Length: 269
Ligand SMILES: [Mg+2]
Image 1: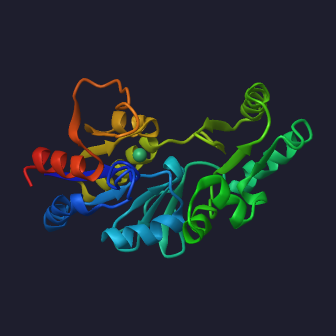
Image 2 (image 1 turned 135 degrees about the vertical axis):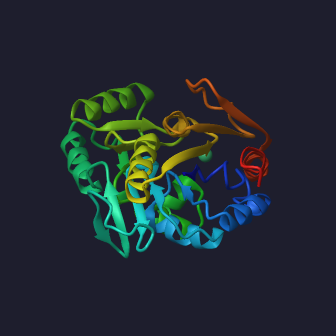
């Protein structure tokens, strides 16, 4: 027997890049629910953001947060306690990297060398975060509750920024350059988290898993490569992620329209 698990990015994939709506994906979401196929959000968002968002979407299974830093599994999804997890806020949590405090201490160590050249989420108030991200107040509050990584807002020159990234990496972090922020955390990715959950599912259900992953960006590459079936969702703002895999599917429609299109086709929903 083979069980199917769907792993999906949120922004630009299940959620529309501009409006954050998932309305166009509802037919496929409903069909997956009827077939008891779990849809696992696999996102850069925080636990606080996902707790709210998964209920809005109507998902009640596991979810992967902060770009693969941790997997959260609701009580009852598995019969046994998943290996290597701890009980956090009503979920079994499997973390792959150190918590935020570890990276904050590391930032403190380099702060002498880069004084006044950066600030970071934990040192910013909600107004600062809103100004830097464009999020509304509630969203900024949820986004600020990061557990595993720390976004750094760079204020110095590009040259000094590269020196900062080098200094941080030399101390064991894995800095990731985003649009406005340099994200400081450990070496985890969405692919590693997917593989762990698939292995645990196979162990507990004694069935083979067929994993399908859907994503639209660079931070989805590891997840798409780790899945049995990779689906690239067309983005209105960036080219499809470049992945090393023989069989890759690409939607013809954007975001949730593409999500609905591809899952309906691939799973004959
Ligand atoms: Mg995305």
